[in-house]
Every structure is written in structure tokens, then in C-alpha cells.
Image (tube, rainbow, N blue to C red; front, top):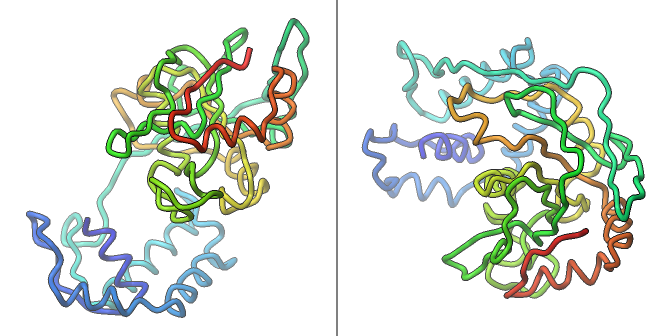
Length: 287
């Protein structure tokens, strides 16, 4: 899309024509610019946008205003033309802000014995569901491998298991990130490896929630990033189908937390992970 091409050019400092309305293939000049992407330019933009001056770039803050202004300047310098409202660079979109009010209580219960989870330490939870108060007491937990359904790759982690009304535990990234390159391209993360995809896929199947097992290398960021991101207010566009689009709860769990969960269920986490990396894996309950 046009936004991807624009970011492309901001990174490489190239020039291109404005995208056509029918979204035709990019002209040869754009492809040539793409071949000249400069890591130095990209690093410079990232350093500027990540600096204290931009205050975290959160929506509805002065840092966001400075961020938008900077991006507009860079797009103009790259030779792009604005296609937003009233001849400007932007389009107004109404957002909904969701924040957790009060403490979060979380625990796993196996064979009648519950163990408490500290939100932000063992687990990091959030919700964008319109219902407000979320209570998932007594719901079953299932393991769905990497949480991927990719028909074109002949891969379906959910095959044979109904996850409606259940909490699904999934692994981060793709099945072959830590193995020999396979159907998902090895260490090049696909859309299926993104946490956004895993939430959307589970929501489409009626799951009550998803917990992604955090590991720093396949996630590409430490637990501190997960913790701070989930604790902050969340923003989303206003949706008529928000109740169907969003899980009632979503979040991450530490690997150590997952190891204990699997052990209490009579399973070894590493063995379960290796099984999930193989074609033909099938999701199964954790008890």
C-alpha cells in the first residue's frame, strides 16, 4: 500500500511519484529506490523518534503531535505528495481508549489447587473488549502450538479442537524460527508469527482469551517491553463488531510461568514446543 511505500522511501531517502488511486504496481523508479535503502538513514530516523523529545509518541499527547510533524517533513523531503484530508498529510480517525482500572487478579487452577499470578511479573494482561469487567473464572486452558492456520502452507494448529470459550496458550513467532528453515522461511518472521495475528485468529474461533509465551529472542524484545506495553492504556479504532473482533482478555506469560503450567499438567514445556514445531501438530487441552 501507499503507506508502506512511503515508509520505504523515508528510510532510503529516495523519490517516487504519488501512488495511483487504483494501487497499481510501483514504477521501476520506486523499485530502484527500494534497492538503495540505507541502514544509516533508518537508524537516524529511529534514533530521532525514540529520543526523549518525542516523549514515547503516545496517542493524544504532545509527543504524538511532534511525531506526526516529523513524519510529514520526511515524506515531503522524499518527494511524496500529500493525499489526506483537505490536501494535508493526515486523515482524522476516532479512537477508543481502554485502560485497566484497579488490580488484576489472575491464577491457574489444576486438580483443585490454584496458584496466583502477579500481573506484570508472571503474566501481563489487557483487554479491548467492550464488556468492561472481565471474568474468566473456571474456563479451560488449551495449548495451540503457534496458533497458526495457514492453508496455503498446509498448516493448522487448531485442527480438530474447538477453542470457543476457552483460553488458548500459544508460542511467539513461527514454527521454524529456531529450527531448520521450513514452510515459514526460517528466521524471517511472517505475518503468522506476529502477536496481532495470533489474537485475531483465536478471536475468529470464539476463544475467550489468548496467552502468548514470551521468549526474548523469538519475540525480539524483553519482558520489560511486554510489561510496560500491557500496563499502558490501549487504543483502537471504533468498531461496530468490537465484541467479536476482540478477545475478552489477551496477554503474555513468562516462559517460566508456562513451564510450571505445563509441568502441573503433566507435560514438559520443551517437548511440547518441539512437537509444535513439526507439521501435523494438533492442539490439546492442558487440563
